[in-house]
Image (cartoon, rainbow, N blue to C red; front, side, top):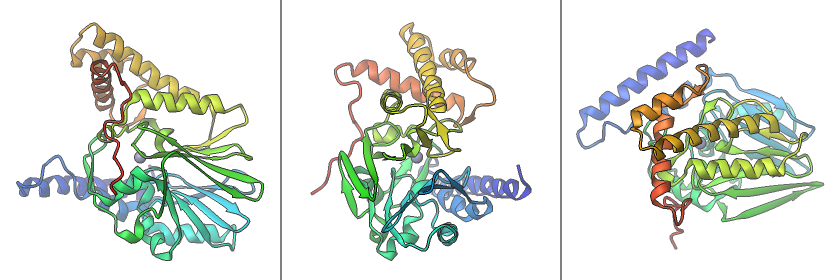
Length: 337
Ligand SMILES: [Zn+2]
């Protein structure tokens, strides 16, 4: 870890601790809700350098590992498309990087889901009247206070109107730019209830949002009704659409191929199947965690193994109860008219 990254991580750790202390000072606020996490990360985000990576003549990645989702960039004939927006504090730097490859303005922004590390930059880009496109559930979640309990119990406050998605859809949406078709596909309850995968069809490049991450064990936002079954199903769909030349920009991590996508799916499937077998034998959770952990590479990053296996256990358990409708979108928000 570089020194400045180490310092940023240390500061983040300190702010996390202070966030918990503050919550405990206020009995009305649950100690399990971390109200400082997102602000702290936003302030430290500048300590992690952004990199511009070329995928082809029209598609680029702005990557800022590990504290922000990958921005996908598409250089269209009439303007630039941005997929996700990282942090508002870094928006000027994003513009500088874009300025090194094009003089065109940003024509549209696509949010892959509601999580702050993919949408915080809307706060800077929104007031510029750039259309922001997202699934309807993403817009509704961003209008309301969220607590991301599947990660660090961080509180995401409602976004102001100027930073909300302005164009929403429910199933599928396409943009046509010269020879390229940009297809937005909705995958229900794989990571959140508003996940959008963006497919540049001619180039055969996907930006997967956080349905696919290449850093280790993922967050599955169970509060939104998301679950490991729907996640594996979504990965199967993507694998079936891909061939050896297909490229994947993950929500986090480097540019990947079908090979990495398959490895990721196999990792999740092996965990799910092990938990299912032990659950069917009525083994206690502590034993399930212990026996599933040993399958995993000790170097695997991401959320803690114990937390992840516990979450999968709960999903397996509720799936068994809910046999008739195993992938029911329990957390899916209904549009409020
Ligand atoms: Zn996410």
